View 1: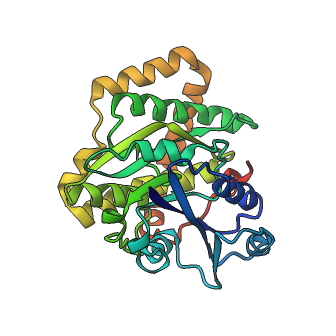
View 2: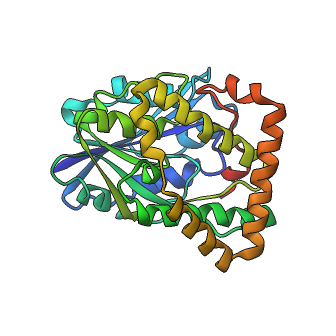
Length: 301
């Protein structure tokens, strides 16, 4: 019987922390064992910790830190000191600002750990848009879904919102604190060690797209900076993981335009605006670190 730990890094997640933790604790354990749910509060200043303390379940372990260290640092700490790998087969990491409605999530993830696989990503999907800007961001979500279909076992499908690691990989995870793409780092670490990766399309969680240009900008900068950081850590070969053929890219964009013509045009207008702003403020991405500026509108699930 495989033993699991679910780990949830959290920063000011009072709006959703109870829902995601209760979802984690309610996972069905048929032929599995959920040893504990670890929540690490990374310098939260809201009611995140007090809400957690109100949940009565012996499997819930709360670690609260006064000072923020960043998600990458906290994931490293979870793997190095908060999980007993001698008594744990797998760890499932969930983002605190996601919605999990599936009590069989662990079973689905577990089924994807076939021979040689040490890393499995679930399938985060966009919640129904509530604002005009979110509606435009459906184009981005559409692009992501199409790429997942084209390249299911690639870095494009490896997402930190729901990511599971085998003990062989988990014991080796030590993410530099400046890394902003911790999921991409783990993906490339897994590959550099010669392990296999799997994408579990049926293990679905839900997230909210940014509802403002400012939050869209924050996420876009983080993604752009991440690739350079990954290349610095693993070498130029890692950049090949992000390559999508021009033909496939054009087909995806045209498909989006056919389905959502106005939204697709508006989306690329926002991309153009972002590029123009960055051309005048090139130093902005240079100061990005593992303690990045957090998006606020994505927390309203």
